[in-house]
Image (cartoon, rainbow, N blue to C red; front, side, top):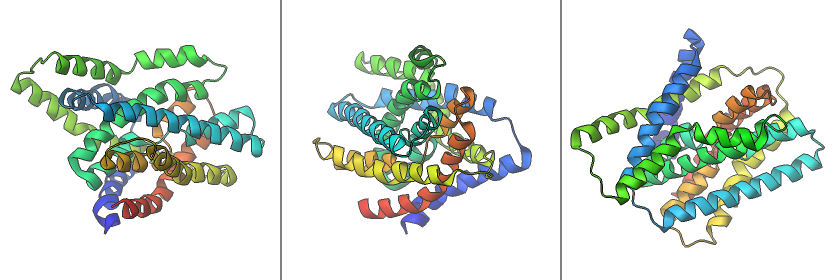
Length: 297
């Protein structure tokens, strides 16, 4: 029942984007720009304008950073074990350390846990986007800009500014007139379905030829098995809401982030491998997420 009620509706939206891209071969850049700069920004603003700052938000930051650190360590040790070169190590890092909490994770959480879980998911998604803007860009651009490029990427993300403005307005009790809030809400509601369609379209562009199956197996094990297990163990050390714990574990079990494929293309860091990691882990996650949701429900 979990598959039919939670996973299948999400997959059907991905499939719609996949079929659309296969038929029309659209340019994804302007659509992605719209989603990032307008739709997601409105969603982030609405979420943080409505959500009070509390200890749970602090725990989200700490747990996310701890999980990232452990995943980086696991990937580095694995790369040493299999003697990957620096480029392949970076490509594997992009595929294992960063999960698709945005255009896959948030809709799954919405279907599985409702609005309460979705609010947590959006907060986590925003922080994950900041993490990817720093560490993701760093690993994609090793030797080609590094930290400087990563810092610039942070300041180019409008959702980061939306967080600050929304929190300030909330803390200062600035009330947005109803008609203006409805306009923001209308745009925010479009964010999740559009970014879901974009993921389906991105997957349609991945070539399935010459897959590096040994490395992809390593990526899949770390991303889909080790990551949620580590997230659960880390959560045990914090007195967090059980719903937040479940959301964090499910998001940690998401496939490789589609955003990292864009970084890999931009910096020419094994883009075919990173894109194939997104495709393979997304397909396998249908089974792993169904199992995990059944365990946590």
